[in-house]
Image (cartoon, rainbow, N blue to C red; front, side):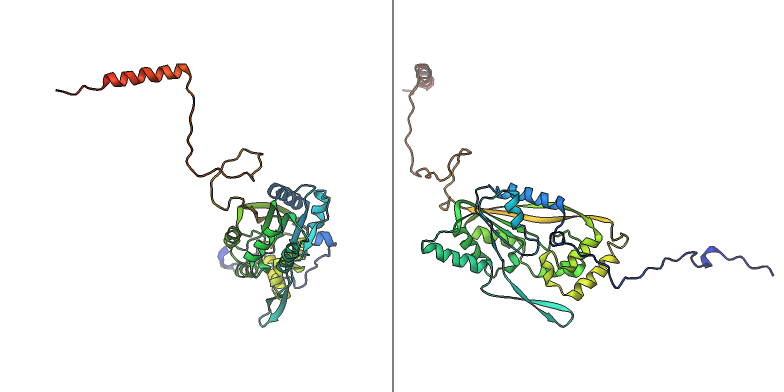
Amino acid sequence: MASAYLGPETHKPLSVISESFQKRYNIPEFDEHEKFSFGQQYEERMYMLIHKYLDLETVDKLCYVGDNKGSIAYHLQEKFVLLEPVTTVVPGHFHYAETDGHKVLPIRIAHVGAEEYFRQLVKENATGKKTIFDKVILKEVVRYFTNPEQLYVNVLKCLSPTGKLLVIHRAGSLTTLPYFKDAKQRFADNEPPYTNIIKTLQTSKLDVQWELECLPIVMPKKKWFSMMKEKYPPQMDLLSDFEVVTGMRELSEGVLKYSYDDDLIEFDDRLLFITATPSHFEQGTPSVFRFGVNQLLPTPSPRDLRLSMDLTPEIDEILRIKEESIKEAKPRPRR
C-alpha cells in the first residue's frame, strides 16, 4: 500500500533537548581570602581609586569602617605602607528574624557600631584625650546608620583640619552585579537613596564631591554562586537561605544558563565614591587661592578699598592731550 505523503509540518522534531534544574549544586569551598574577593584585577582597581579619592599617605592615621566579611583594612595597611595601625570599626549589627514566606526581617541593634564609637570618641576628645584621624573610610555601611547626619558631624569632629572622609557605596538602584530579581528589589527597598547620602553630608557642613566608578570583575560562575551562598556582598544578609537557593536557580535557568561552572563570567561593579572634607569657608565669602598655598588664610575685608596708582610721564602726557581735545570739541553756548 502506497503511503500518503506527509509534509514536514506533521512530523515531530527529529531531536529534543531535555533540560532540567539541578537541585543540588556542587559549589566548591574557597579559602578565607578568596571567599570574599572579586579577584586581583578588581582589588587593584579598588586601591587605585582609594588613592585617587582619598590621597592616602604613609603617615596618615586611618579609620576604616566596614563589614568584617571582605574587609580590606589589613590590605590597606600593607598596600599603602601605613606607619600607624589602621583603626577598624564595626559599622553596626542586625538581628535577622525569619518570617513567614521564607523571608528575614532585619532588626537593628542599638548602641552598637560606628555611631556609638564616634559618639564616645567625641566625648573623650572633649575631656582632653585627643584621637584625631587624617582619613576615614565608610565602605558599604550606610544601611547600618539610624542617624547618619549626627554620625557625620561626630566624624567631622574627629578629623584633622586637612582630613578627608571617603564613603564607598553600592547603590541598589545602580548595581550591575548579576543578582536575581528579588535581591535587586530588596536592596533598593531597604536602603536610602544615594542622593540622600550626599545631601546629608552637605547638611553636616562638609564640602562634598562624588563620582560613579566601574570596577571590572572576571571570575568562574561557580565562584559567584559560592559568594552568593556565603551571602556576599554583605547586603545579601537581607535574604534567607531559601531565597538565595531560589535565586541561584533563577540565574542558572536564566542569564547564566548556557555557561559551565568553570566558564569565566565578566561583569562590572558600579560604586559611588563620595569624598567629604571639612568646610573652611562657613561665612560664604568667595575666595581665590593659588594652588599649594595654605588655605587657612584670613578672608579679605569686605569694605570698599581706595586705591591709587602713579602714572608714568608718557601716560600723563597722553591723558593731558586727550583732556584738551575733549574741551575743544565741546560746542560753545549761543548768545
